[in-house]
Image (cartoon, rainbow, N blue to C red):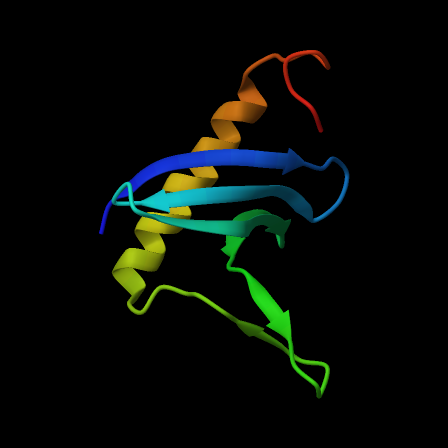
Length: 95
């Protein structure tokens, strides 16, 4: 499965949640509400989840194997970091 598009939908400053993204796989499957989190001095990806009746959260979509999870995290975090390195103004990027 190939990641064919990444769109950063929203960014946040001064909090662990840094960005919300949409990811397209093989030009035919879109996954929304993927999050980039910064905690314990590193970035990681949190997949979309829903709240269970008992108050816990369960992923509604997630990588099945560690090699794909690593590829997904590397791609999404790199995309986010490249955005952070690019100067932007409020007219060209809505937070």
